[in-house]
Length: 601
Image 1 (spheres, rainbow, N blue to C red):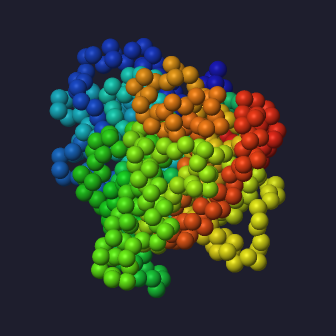
Image 2 (image 1 turned 90 degrees about the horizontal axis):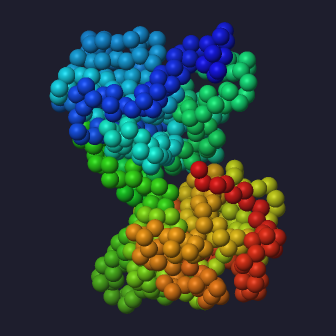
């Protein structure tokens, strides 16, 4: 019925209709049994690896794609792009095409065995088409790699989730392809400006992220919806990746693209410092420090004109990197990186003290961190299931002794706050409002405990908080004894998500058998019983990573820790919490939470 209505509509774009028909056709193939349908074709046994390219418009993705398509190394690469015409392939290289200059969903095949096609409304449908095309080719001439170019405002996490869901639901396509490597290109000439920008990634506020130079938005793409019922229009647009970052801030989108990558290409390094008086090498080093703080596991290369070696982009991660991860895994990586950075900082201090007779030991605050590090190391083995916890510690320990881990990449530092008592939601909200956040927080006025605008110490803390670029981690709020929350702040945006229940609230017979030991490693007491919540809290915890300028400084770390400690329940509130812990409604009434908590999708 939808197709009939769309086809009769005079204002409905014909290209959209054709694309929808392609999707229906491809899903029909799968439902009828694609495996048997391809039995007469040349189906190779190995997977076709897929590389995903992310990056803002102008970061150099198109130039990199041209470089890949015109390779002289004998690799047959298929590329999925938003618009074939935008790639501007040399006509001398084209073997066959289907109206590529019109920006249609046609296919362009090159003489060297490569191919380029436009992205349909559904990414996996485009991938399926390329797999079918590859299998129809002669023996040994199928595609070696598939490269997917995302739009400049796409969140690569959503693309990663599509492939992970396809595996989860045993989609036949996943027997033929494998998401292998995530690559992000960064325009070094604007990165440091964007990473602190409060602008929204929307066409009216940041048109440079949506339209190329001289290009103007077309009204035709939106006018057709005026004549179609809203539910149908929403169904048709569901899954479009054109503007899926439209509600994000520019900084948040840049952080997402940087964090969700195995390879980061620092492109346009030759343009750094051209329009300013900044030292080129110093600026590039600063960009790399921010990137490594956001994504310590990524491999970083410097490039000019979007040209990278093929082996740096194709099959670089072997399907074993960020493509296998999720929210919890990304969080664990950040924690482990902070540990490693703290150890490297400790090693540096030791080396310095060996050469300085005036320093006979570390100051007391540093020894406390080292003690926490040792405790941490003995309690955490690492895992990849939800609700992970980095250390084991009994909750009857004074909550003011929250654990601190920190690393320092020159001016950019990483700090990990850990505690085993819940936050008071209103005090936490008041704290969050002191971070450089302009969207995602309620407009209600929250009281900040013992806050004095004239107090120099408070002003110093505010100065620290204003320089936080990123904060994320597991959170326990006092309005629930069940909900495992995850806080995510990037640039000027904030979101609190509910990932599900703490493992401690579930009977052990419901735990995944293969993950029991890893789950128990997250508990403050391996013999934890829910009825003994006054002495053990299971895997409930605060575990938040902060990344920002100056956070490698020990005094800044402890100032931030003290502020967060003040957001935890005091002893009287804790007793009240324990008396109501079995009654969620009472907790919600006693500890009202002004934050808007979203369920994780």
